Length: 347
Image 1 (tube, rainbow, N blue to C red):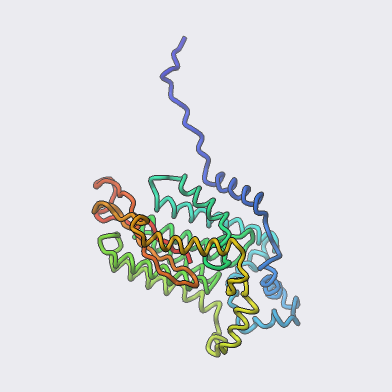
Image 2: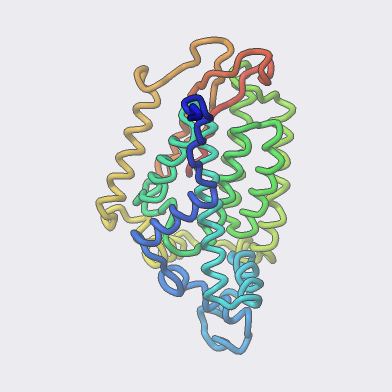
């Protein structure tokens, strides 16, 4: 009888990223559900329907108020183009799936770049925490929601951009510039904020000197390219700039932003418990970041330092947090200088 004791062991089954992503999406829809044509979409879809057919909502004062100034122009063009091809509901669903895939892909890559020693396990944990988070900052702004929003599309591009520059700053900066330019087209306000955060992070990396592998020439080039990349998106959405030049009186600004449009964001006494817990968690992380026990400084000259900004909304506390990870041995594909392992670009 043939001895099969030394036969090759069949390799363990390894699911493809598409299969894992599909399972995560299915679990998310099962637990959280999927919303369409309601919530925040109800405020913006009338603008889209009027764009597709000017006869629809032709006399609606809310819709017509966006004729001169419409900061959602880029996202509405994207939705309008997709809707003409497959219909509105299908376009919303397809773009949601693409946004979901880009978000978890970016989060997973960013986490693995920060903690490569933990492999895909760290990425799965980060994706799970990302999807169940009730509040992404101090306030009521969620990191992800079970509906398609222009803000979520912009953030998905930001996660991919962050992962690219943290994995390899010298190669990833070009993709980050492209992604942030698209984010500014989809959501100009978010695109501008992201560009400022990324540009600031590039400069901090350069200031770190030997702690990162980012020279001044690369940092300045990437920061300048990022600023140029968002200019078309800002021009597309904010033109003809008449409303911006005229401005608002302080009283009208307070009425529109605090009392009418965003009381749940601007008035803390209306926050729910998850929002208060998120606010407390951010303050606790800020304290730990400056605590000697909460920091892990590079222990060797060849250990990669990592620098990034954590701008907390409302408090606006900039945190510079080093988070080292061992570099590969010299001569095994590593450069002469360590690479940054983590860039915190949450806003």
